[in-house]
Image (cartoon, rainbow, N blue to C red; front, side, top):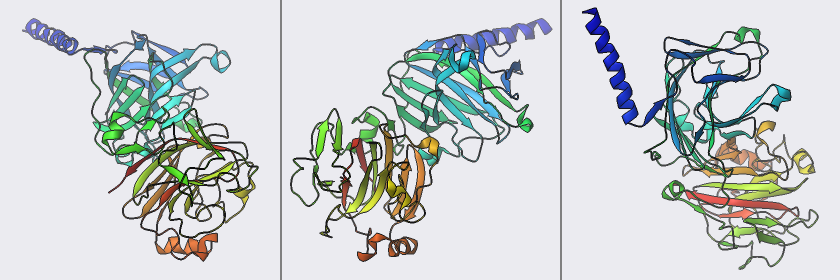
Length: 457
């Protein structure tokens, strides 16, 4: 009888493996040993227990990575399960990653895409991080609906889809991030991270991984539900998903179509340049609107999601304004709510206003952007700004994927801020039903591209 039961179990395992192989899935972990895996950096412990790969933190070690010997190229879908037991624990899954043995002063360096596992109150699990290169690519603050998908002290189902330069991530069946890269290259390593720790009390924290499998043939990308913001680093382009979701380009990368000078009927004949997929204001030695002047969209908008990339010159100043009515007939730059574009380090405007409300990504002269230095890309580097105005007049500013401020347009708090600002001379400032989008000529060189908008209803 014992022989019959054992035989049945063996047959069942073989049958399960056969079915899995038929479905095109390849297991990367046998559930018993670390065969097919190797540790590349760090000194964290990795062992197999009860069908899990368990990573354990140690003191005085850099990030540790247990990497599969299988190097994957082309399109694939990767699935696994992971568990974290403590909110202080952080981990991740590497994919399309690489190893530089000479990196980190000869200690070795793993770099590339990382699926974030974040048990903290930040709740960025499922977000996309670029280990050892560009930092955050898709913070989950861009998709707040997915921030509650992670389950502490439970196994979480991870799914990563890579097709061409596009990456989609899922957590427990919830779509989390959609990223399209401008960097080519579609091969690399798969790895399991144990994050470095800095406190003795964090020694011995564990992260669990199991049911690790990959599929490379007969696959199609999943269809995301509508309303998920796409970080698309291909300039002036939209994915099919973005188009279906209502996004469109305000700048086609080639012409001034859809833009005119503020208080003008045509695009400025000087002061602005359209070249190499960029629309930019040229320098006039800091003289505001003294060269080409501001430019505005020919259309007006009320509730919208606006995304744009910008690059400042050293010490530069500009801005993106919204709800611009052009009714004020003032001299200089046209009036409107302004997402400040500024080199905080070198431009004197950063020290003016009240409590930093004229710094980068702030609501100019009204509200300061709450931002960390690590999320600011310096002059001559591209940043991504985003302004969301909901139909209920709730407004949000983002910088490189991080929400840096929010307010209620027309609220008492908003009007109190206006009352002590330079805008107090205009009745009902910033409360127009609709208005133009404006790119400011503040006399400094500034470049814009990938300007896209989605009307919200």
